[in-house]
Image 1: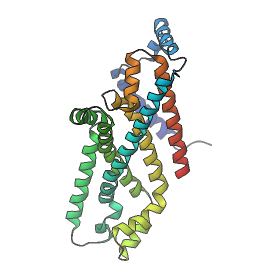
Image 2: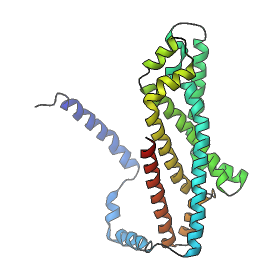
Image 3: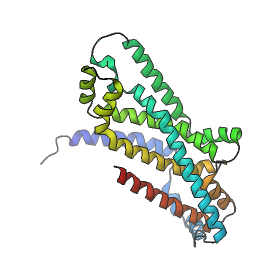
Image 4: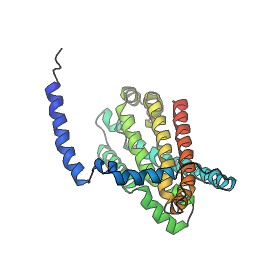
Amino acid sequence: LRDPLARRRLVWLLAALVIAWPMLQLSGFAPSALFAPGNLQVIGGFLAGFLPPETAPDFLAMLAKATLETLAMATAGTALAFVIGAPLAFVTTRALSESRIGPGPGRTQASMVRQAGRSVLMVLRAVPEIVWALVFVRALGLGPAAGVLALAITYGGMLGKVYAEVLESTDTRPARALMESGSGRLAALVYGLLPNSAQELISYTVYRWECAVRASVVMGFVGAGGLGQLMDQSMKMLNGGEASSILLVFLVLVLLADALSNALR
């Protein structure tokens, strides 16, 4: 009945606490401040301003337009990110490297190409989308076009990295057998790797689209359009009812994304 790994797990737990405690101190994490009498009163008053949600026809019309802009921004940005990330994932996946099936010419060149692809993915995802949005807003002006490009660049790096890791973590023996029998890399990908990893790839892609919808809120605060810009205006005007309606729309969008992911998988 005794767990043979109990001591090891206890050591790792203590090590995690030793590492996490200084991090909590450096971050100024003090949850007790939330429950101070004055703070609770301020939080309660702020949340009370969110009720009831705004239902005026003029505002609902603006909300519908902003929702369509957000969906268009997230969908177009994710689609462009897929165009960027999928080829880079194909290049950087070790499971599709012909040099793995045996010695031959081109091993050094293939390794350099994979490393270059990984470097590109790292650069793309290292810069947050809000920074790209600030750059493109200055170049293109206010509107969702800046948000589309910002999402495409940052999420392209994220999709490429995760796609490559998913393809490498699945059973790579079918792909290797295909390449050893003379198949090309693209055929090995389609018939050797995708059948075992398609569900996970689709699930992550839809999740990244869901993240793009949420990221549009932050980018809207710098002028990238959509629901985020409408939220910024409502918060500046201290109109909690409008902000509450916008948050309800976001909740519906997240539920739709979850349902879409389940249906596709």
